[in-house]
Amino acid sequence: MTETASATSGRRDGSRGLVPLLVLYLLVPAVIAGLMMYYLAASRRAAGEFGFPLDDSWIHVRFAQNLAAGHGFSYNPGQPASTTTGPLWTLLLAFGYRVTGEYLFTAAALNWLICVLAAITAAGLARTLIPRRGFGAAAALVVAATVPLPWLALSGMEPPLFVWLTLLGILLHVRLRRTRGPGTFAPTVVFALGVLARPECVLLFPLAMLDRLLAGRYEGWGRGSALSWLKQVAIHTAIFLVIVAPLAIYNYRVIGRPLPSSYYLKAMNYGPLMALAAENDTWLVHSLVVAPLKEVGSLMVMWAGNNVMLIVPLLFGVFWIVRHSGAPARAEERSYLIPLILIVQPVAWGIATNFHRAPDFQGQRYFANLGPLYVIIAMAGLWWIIERVRPAWRRILLPAALGLVLIASLWRQPAYARLYAHNVSDITKMQVTVGRWVRDNLPKESYLCLNDVGAVAAITGCRVLDTQGLVSPETLASRTLELGRDGTWRDRSRQVLWGEEPDYFIIVTRPGRVPAPGQSPLASKELLLINNEDNITSGGPVIALYETVWCRYAREASVSQAGAAVR
Image (cartoon, rainbow, N blue to C red; front, side):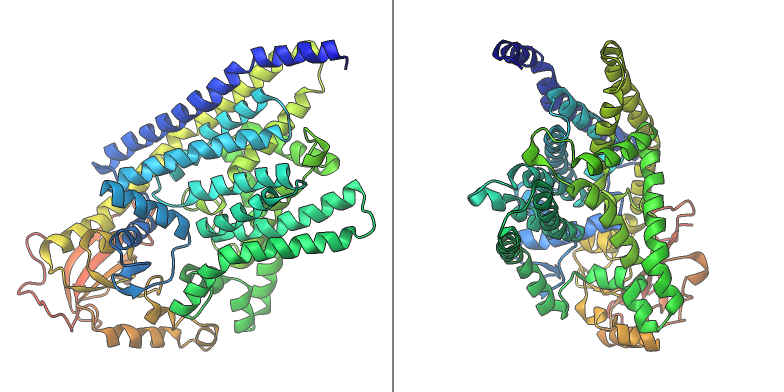
């Protein structure tokens, strides 16, 4: 290209640069805010009030309340508990709660800001594939308009932070991988912070180190290249561990295990570790072979549902990246990291959980970080497809394709808004209603035993005992491979619960499993029962409250007027 041509091209790009900037910094934030308000209005109509879509959201609130009050990472003040799966988000929410004294709209405002940052970061990452401002802005706009981003933004949980740190870490890795000086460690710091936002981010760091190896071999290694790479890995690993290790150390001191308690309650119960403990070869083969294939297949189906226009371009985009090392704007930006994480994360999740639940479970939150990567790669694939047609047709096809993609994304929003509204309605009818009844009718000093600990604890402020062990180390101790193998963990757990002598027992369950009064020491008298027959959110449609045989505040009647059963 001649100097004159280059200058002319630069002026042409500059004259068109204002529109992408307006899209990126004005339209994208407005789209995210508008969709959030649309979801909030739908939930208000369904539930009669604003709320959270999951009981897990309230767990973050409870931790944030105690952090803001100076009680540290505790669910019961003064009693250290395992961290949440997103401790970094919990800290941000605690800071916001300390400032505002409110959690629902504080969480929404924080997540709106984080979603905007994620979309802007997605634009930068997209431009490492297609070096056009317009393409970056278009990718960001589609990310903003595609489900489940509004659901995640209003979840009161960590997925938006999980998304943003994933995108930011990958972008910094691609752009700074070959730089020298302190900046080269920025991606590693972000990857480590990502682990504090969501444990699945732990995969990004080793994959980034692998990507450094692949990129080095692709560009041609000289003498000592392997040793240089090993030195880099050692330094980056040390930095990564300095940030991540304190979390593992804290968890080990509190619960005797390095990972958050949720791992031992969920993933460990279904994956290869439990299969080995049970000496079940069929289970093991399913976990290692069948489950990952089902996970990847279900993920593709889910993404096709999110935006059907992008599923074929996704396949083309992945193929193009693998073949051309990302077709980057500059040679130093070659990277396999995006296709690596798109493949490795669902495979690892399928193995760890034995495909216990489909990836669209709970607003797709466990795969939230992959959604924008799907959009970026698919948009790049669509761009490369259109680039193969005649130039005269491109001017028509590019805006037409973007319009169709946006329509396909927005088409899914009403259904997802209804899903969000139903989720909020379920939690409000069940856990929130019981929490308010307990707050208004029982002593604040009551000791509650629950199998679903979120809203009730956050609303009442009562001390709680978690039958699952999520926030109660004493019950988590019964969840071991050894006790699971010999089938005695339930007996051990029951001994712990009875030894604690709680005053009241609250259970979320299915109709056929509702304890009859007097059937168990935990269910001496029924005080409140709610049967939410159209429930799709909680673990069961029934939530029941009982006095226990140890209750220090026994009531004259089993059901008061204020707590009449709701059926």
